[in-house]
Length: 220
Image (tube, rainbow, N blue to C red; front, side, top):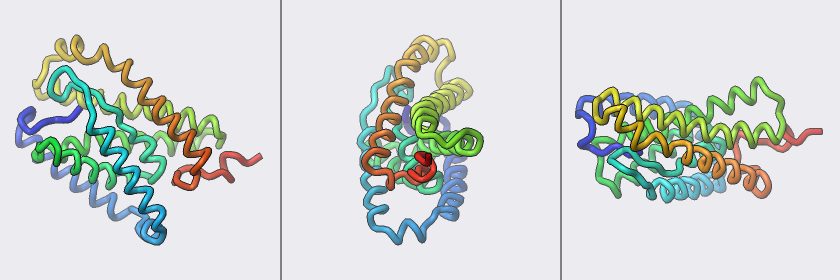
C-alpha cells in the first residue's frame, strides 16, 4: 500500500503535503491535550499502541510497488484515542516507517492514504453507530470494530486504486487481475484482528478505549 517517491508526480506529492498539513493543524487544535497530558498512563498507552502500529505497518506483502497489503490496525487505534490523537499518532508512525523506506517525498500522501483516511472512516462510522443505534456491547464490537475495520480498509484500497488508475500509474486491467482478487482475502482478517483486539481490551482494559464506557454499553 505504500507509495514510493518515484511512482507519482512531484506536483501531486507536493499537493498532498499541503493537505496533510491542513489536517494536522486541525487535529492539533482539536486534540484533548489537557486530559492527555494530565495522565501519564494515557501517554504510555499511546506510545505502546503507536509502536504496535509501526510494527504491523513494517510488514507487507505485494505483487508490485504500491499494490500490496498489510494490516492497518487503525480502527482499534481510533477507538482508543479518538480522531484528533488518532490522526497525530498515525502521522508519527508514518514518519517512523518512512525512516525505514526512505520515501520522504511520498510521506504526506502515505500518511493521508494509510492513516488519515482510515482514521476518519473509522471515527465517522463509530459516531454514526453511537448516534443512531442502541448502545449495546455486541453492536459496539461488531459494527464499531469488526465491520468498521473492514470498511476502513476497503476505503483505503479503493482510494489507492482510484489514485493509481487516475494517474495512469497502472491500468485498471492490470490492477483488476493482479491486485483486486486478493482484496476479499485481506478485508476479513483485518476486521477479525480489530474485532478480537477490541473484545480483549473491553475485557481487561476498557479504560484504554476513549470511545467505550461500561456504564453506557453494559447498563441494564
